[in-house]
Image (tube, rainbow, N blue to C red):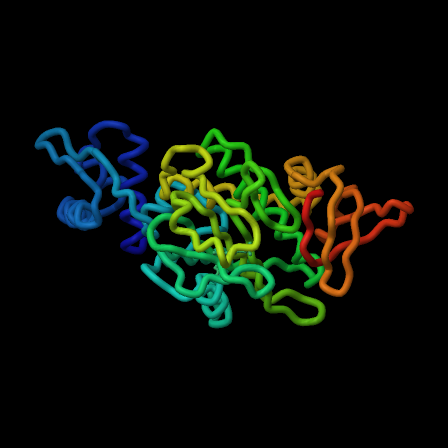
Length: 327
Ligand code: BTN
């Protein structure tokens, strides 16, 4: 077992045991000497874990640091794919750029890159994604599904649904999805997703799912002049700070479960959930595709993620990309 794997296992044993776990049982379960166990406990303490040691009783985990580290993010998560490797950075240009580069160098499926701050966060359509330090979540995941490039758009469904579920599980807020991949609360954007792909004509080499969630940012931290749509954060919308570690662990778990479902059952059920949560279903919208603009009523999304809009004369438009606003 790798060193980090041992630390994760120790934390898991502490958590499952509840109270004290004896040094002897730790050493037996891990196949390590008592001295080696003690060294790991010291290492965990150095990372901010508060571990009590009482003679004749053993060790007890009192508290964990609220830091996003590979260990704190993955310990006890039992992920099938997503989170197999986690890279946590203090500051970077863009987690998507880092993840893309790692994927080009052969990073395994499920590799996750997280940064505390992005200096050049990328939004859709070449826009900027504001990424102040320490308050929000900036996360990218490398996936290597054996699907065609056209089907890769379906992955958007799963990241959007995973973020919506994580918000619901960590707050009392009711997120809504706005096509293609925005998440709104009370009509204001709280999260955005940017997928980037490396593919050949027939096959996807890898996809990077980029996820940005405004967790604890204050509106005063937003430069509203660079925003195209009104924005908010979970703190601003709900009035309570969100635990970044808890939120990120929840999101990784949701992503892992939904990705497994996507690979084993296809996108149908995930798309249905996407549609259920959509702020646009049945609503009248104005669509701007760059060269043309039109209005109509949203009837759904097709299997490749295109928005289906019925015009007043009954014609059905399939919108693959563009800006869509509720009327
Ligand atoms: C959008 O709504 O325009 C998409 C925003 C996507 C932002 C995330 S933050 C993590 C990842 N890294 C980036 O540079 N962008 C995505």
